[in-house]
Image (tube, rainbow, N blue to C red; front, side, top):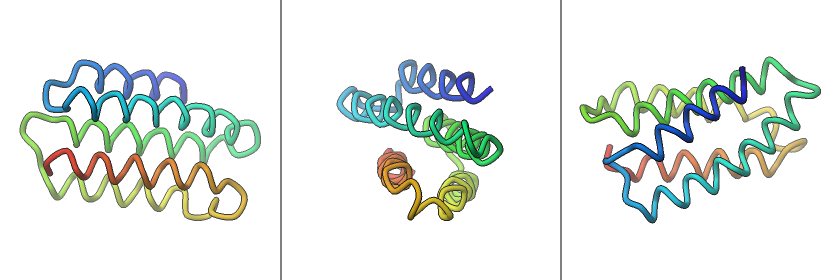
Length: 110
């Protein structure tokens, strides 16, 4: 299920007309790293990893919609950020990746 969500994010980013190619490449690179981090986390904290992947998918969907809703986007970003807060010490790279991912999505024009 986690990999399916991450696959959906990847496909959405690749197909998005709203994302510049340079941003797309960077987001896909972040997604590759996020995939590794979430997969590692899922071995010990599956529910939390699932939550992170779910909020990442939702955030990517809201950021790449043709008709954007700033309120929905903000809620999805808040959820994604909250889903990794407890991992600042144990998984600092995961938190860093999510923060960069959120920042990039925020800069897509919402």
